[in-house]
Amino acid sequence: MVYKLAHDLEVLYQLADTLTNDPRGYMAMHSANQMVNLILEGNDADASAIADEYFTKKNGERAHNLAAIGNCHIDSAWLWPYSETKRKVARSYSSQLVLMKDYPEFIFVASQAQQWAWCKEYYPSLFEQMKPKVAEGKFLPVGTTWTEMDGNIPSGESFIRQFFYGNKFYQNELGYACKEFWLPDTFGYNGQIPALMRHVGLGRFLTQKMSWSLVNKFPHHNFSWEGIDGSTVLAHFPPGDSYHMYMKVEECVRTVTNLQDKGRVSTSAFLFGYGDGGGGPTQDMLERKKRLKDSDGCPKVTPLTPNDLFSQLETEQHNMMRWVGELFLELHNGTYTSQAYMKQLNRLAEFRLRDAEFMLSSAVATKGAAAGSLLSDSMATLEVAWKKVLLNQFHDVLPGSGIETIYSDAKKLFDEAIVAADGVLLHASEVLFGASSDNTQTVMNTLQWPRREVLELTSATKSNKLGKSQMSRASQYALVDAPVFGYNEIVSQTPLVPVTVVAETDGLFTIENGMISAQISPSGQLVSLKVAGNSRDLLQKPNEQKFGNQITLYDDEPLYWDAWDVMDYHLETGKVLNNADVRKVYYLKTLC
Image 1 (spheres, helix red, strand yellow):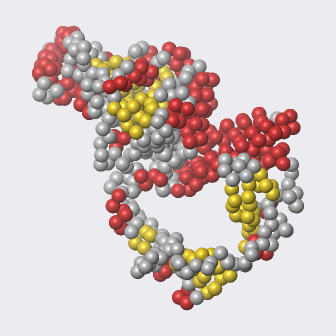
Image 2 (image 1 turned 60 degrees about the vertical axis):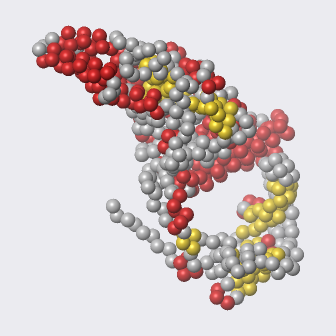
Image 3 (image 1 turned 90 degrees about the horizontal axis):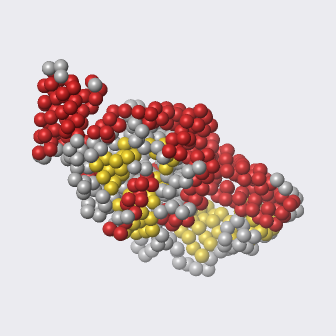
């Protein structure tokens, strides 16, 4: 009884505090005052009856409906490493199973197939307890993807793999197929996402991060999002502008007040539960939800699955506006350069995995039985490698917005993925072309256009046939042509005119090879660039001095988060480095 009375009074207080100029707020205050008087007299039963009578007052039929969806949005790494996330997953998921015993109407969703896979691997008994709740529609996977990735940096192929491996896990392990792309927290959304979603059979999208834009408030919470190729999906932003609400009256009222599409839709997502670090909904939140189910003065609060929510929104999609192209977040733009080596390793891994799969497919297609067990063994290896890359594309790892520890973990995973891809690539190449010899070196073009490029040769591909002019100290280079999806042998060519270097005054020097002439400053600036036989300088304009390879330093003092942000005004602080500046580099350590 005491626990019930405490929650009755709490919700009545919140109603009175939120509905300050509304008669229903005064009614809540009056009911709470009566309850306190009765409790002080020792009459708890009558106090409870007053609360019960108040909460029987229902909303009108046109009251906005909040889809109460419990979640915990666990960052796969952020202020903690991957190893701690595995424990967060177990603690959060097990807590929700306990709550479901006492609150059978409670619906909980968990995104990121990687976290479900961790649960299966490290806490198998817990995973088995979750399966029946999945079948009942109470504990549901959501979002389809392997992890909640960055929305701009990964390649299109990586996006497809996120959907593919995430959906594969859910279907194989749980017999469940997600119908939505659930990405509540990332730092912008590229304009190809609707096309990628449609490519994998998805037409529903949810996020809330656009509410963080610094200057312009995004004009919709519900809209048809059209990609750059014309593909369209239904997009929904929870109007509460959060994925970790606490089921308070103020949050419920604010959700409806914030709604940009009033009159166009009748239902909105209300995502509640402790998030980022996990935890999820608590018993207190579920007690408040019981009292706010249909309380006069508040929107209705109804437990719904994501599928139920979007099914309702789809009936109202004809009322919604249309947005075409990228969803640009006006914040966190510094994440394109923070921890830059993460971006470098990610791109290298993406290319290496793609090349390995191309060579593997070519070997199997052309050699057939001769490929032996290459396909099955290699596919398993590549799947493990891909999942490591996809995990590292999480929206606080790849962007560079986490603690230092997670980047040593991520580098290890990237390195392992690249080594695995190289192994498959080498094995497939040997099946396709045979072992290399000293006399024949083959170059494969894995892209869909012909290429002519100068290649730096590794020790395994250096040939004695190369001329001296093609050798630069320890490195050797070759000019190679290769057709579309084809191969060619390395051809030794001697440049018609040797490269010459001429030192000049003031430390300048000129490099010429018979085709172009480039003048370089001691600091590495490209001072002049001319085509042989033409006096026009490609860099310079009349009465205007321009340089190539110009190094400029900018102030980096964001308003909020150092690792996330670079502000627009930084462009006004640029300082061009001269020769004296680049001769010295200072490492400054600030003690806090």
